[in-house]
Amino acid sequence: MENWNGIPKNADSGRLTNAENWRLVISPVAIQTARAFTAWTHRYLTPPISAEFVIGVQNSDATLVGVVFVDRPDCWVFDDGGTAEIVCLSTDGTPNACSALLGAAWRAARAKGYRRLIAHTRVDEPGTSLLAAGFRLVPRTLTWQAYSRSTQGDDTARVLWELRDTGGRR
Image (cartoon, rainbow, N blue to C red; front, top):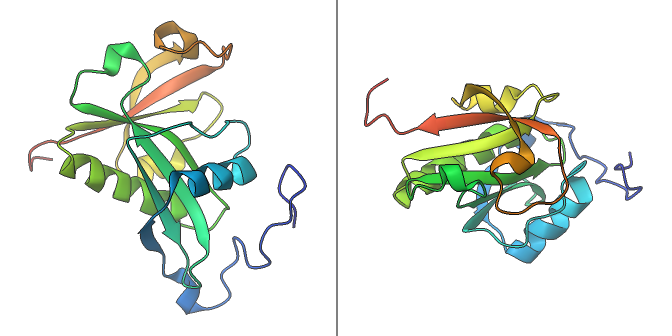
């Protein structure tokens, strides 16, 4: 199997051959490693230059199967001091890797004092992993440049997802 850019993936990438491979382990990862992984696996985003923190997830063979970059919001409207943003999440297709990373990102953000975690997806993406992790869709379509600090020429319509700390309430 090859990735979109022609680089061969691991033979077991995305396939679980036995029950042991179901075990995913959250791990720290160097930003350089995470950037290289994202360049290898992500369909359209370039890897972020920096992030407040980066988290990885490995399978039982200690192979990196996903990374998430979390930083202050790029959008000035959301940069209120209590909000963190998932700026990039990429996996090699391993089942449940996205959910594991989203959960770990939320736990780490809360430990750092953030009360809200946001993420943007393209309008044509379903956001299934975000829904499964407890994020809710904020009903407003954004143009990426509308609120962004950096204008990268990307006019793709985005939707906003959020997860809030409810203080123990549901």
